[in-house]
Image 1 (cartoon, helix red, strand yellow):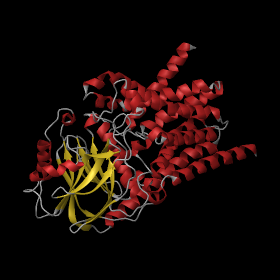
Image 2 (cartoon, helix red, strand yellow; image 1 turned 90 degrees about the horizontal axis):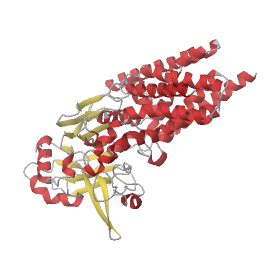
Image 3 (cartoon, one colour; image 1 turned 60 degrees about the vertical axis):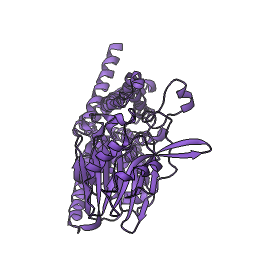
Image 4 (cartoon, helix red, strand yellow; image 1 turned 120 degrees about the vertical axis):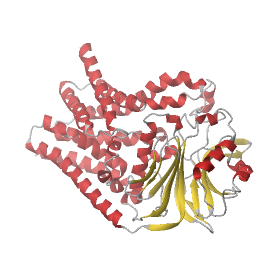
Length: 514
């Protein structure tokens, strides 16, 4: 019995790991038709032999462990930049996937807890449970909605277009059903069950057709020239600047060189997250002598820089996107709301600091979260623009980014050096495509040690600086579309899909009873 159990667990661990091949940057999405179907068939077969809820939880947990340990290994790279964290590397490689796998354990637990006799109901329950649990993974304890299975479609923009209506979580629920439906052919007892397989394939084709129509409509729209240019910088400045007290002058000079300023053009320069070391938001003006000869009133800057604030005699630190004029006078700023646990803030900080732990990205104390994410409205003599600011990690969230749609575009700044030369930066970038489609807005991304890009409202990457490249991408003309359905209603659409699945489960049960 033990040998059989070990074989089963190795099988689940293996198909979980193979599923990771469907994610960016490989995007072999067809693999999921095999792995998800095999996982579902395994659960169905086992449910006929026994109903041990604990072992079923362990089945799902093992599948999840294989999945997360193979696609989140790069998290440990962030611990290599400071020798005091290196002892945590083995723990990060294993413990984080072990924790996230708990959510997948909950999927198989719910599968057996609400055990269904009919294959079609088991299929719907599995998909529904998986979809809801993935939503909870994206919200519980600040949430970590990284590598939802929906991201395996990152290269299929026509199919992704449907996220402008149902959002990423709604699409993720559909993807789980789509990838699992071949199992119905293996398990079917009635011809009607085979129809479910045909149904989901047909819906996929409908999504593709809808996306193709939307793409043609978008590309026929007239391009409107902006009366300014937005330049998003892609740089490769070493993370050593955080640890070696680098002179900010050298970093600023490098950024100015990459920016290629032109005094005759109206330009908004976007510089990456936390790019200028060892100075705070209010101190930057002391370096205006570096800007005097290169810039004039035709220029403003959006810069990722730390903000300091005294509150009750205590200094608080914020990760900010700050807006400056050409004289480096502060015009506006946004403080990051969604902080990275352990990276930017230390949960239970007072307790864990007693063990010598601290946040990874700074050596002083945890960042403080900003109060609210608001659209930044720049109504200046030379510039008029409304943009939604998103700093690094915030781009991975769906449905919580904004409340009003009356802004022009999304600006995302990031520092991807913590991921090294792994798949991490490419996975991070894939989220930007989804956010652009969901919102129906252009997305401008500036990154250090990552990918800088211009992504249009239907997810097409109009310009891109690949990982390791230095330079800038620029936006000068745009096509404007109406606010998307998802941008208006958010994850309420996902709630309606949940109700639809529940309705179908009860409907099929009534048919059985009749």
